[in-house]
Image 1 (cartoon, rainbow, N blue to C red):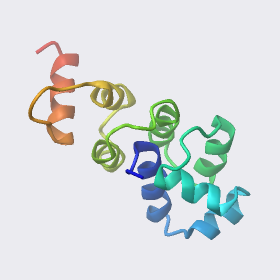
Image 2 (cartoon, one colour):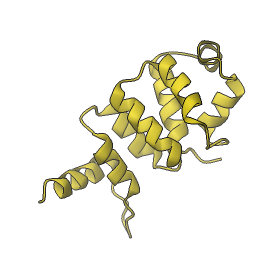
Image 3 (spheres, helix red, strand yellow):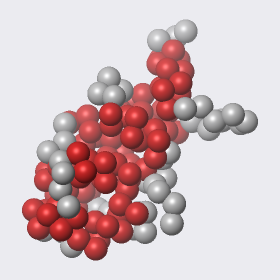
Image 4 (cartoon, rainbow, N blue to C red):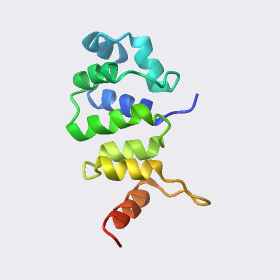
Length: 125
């Protein structure tokens, strides 16, 4: 099963908090196997309520929570872009969602270049 954006985000945020799957499970009252399946992309359609429980345990910023909630409806977003967006706190939800929704022919741009292009578009350049 390939990595998906939602799973990448949850795993990254969990590891940032240095929580094991079982610790996160206990704190959120969500079964650890379900969390594992979300992280690996085996499950892709969690409810907003379930993700909100996880986000509370992960102590995310409002921006990070917005990105993860956006990923509920777009779980197949590029994992590299997801990691970049979570690591760079200057990336807004608007920029992230535009970059994640863009499709390119030929050469695939890296996350930094893709965000840069989106920013130029938003600035009218």
